[in-house]
Length: 163
Image 1 (tube, rainbow, N blue to C red):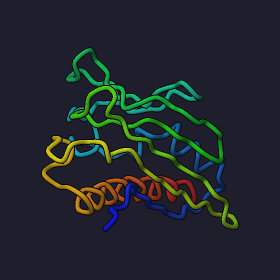
Image 2 (image 1 turned 90 degrees about the vertical axis):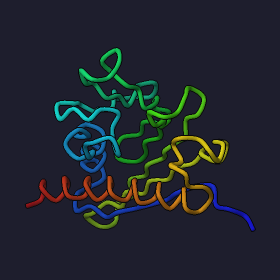
Image 3 (image 1 turned 30 degrees about the vertical axis):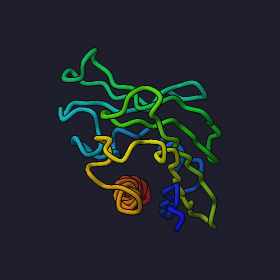
Image 4 (image 1 turned 45 degrees about the vertical axis):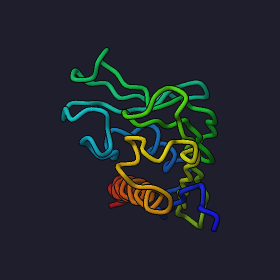
């Protein structure tokens, strides 16, 4: 039996793709949930943001993070209103253990489908701390719930733009 090697989740937001991309990349701290499940810091004053453009970073800044900031990863593709691809690592991973997150923004009428695909966890050993004791499909299902929760929060943020 072959185990799938990626996680894919999507949501539909009621804004055009250029606005959806801006919400995702410029208002990240407003929708990306807080707490250790989603961030490197538990500090309610932590700030998470993308440094725009290829080569930029997804970083979190907070006083309780060693050195004041945590780099989740580098931006690999930056195509406003279309696509964002970035490396992603959790606090429990080491350099070289990054996964890749690809986010597509596809117009569907006046709305936008945001589709997020994460790949690259297959190489992590089964007992790696980031797996939380889960392997195979169970681990990938946990990741799918993680990203679905975040996309739901982005959708709520987008709905605030239209209400």
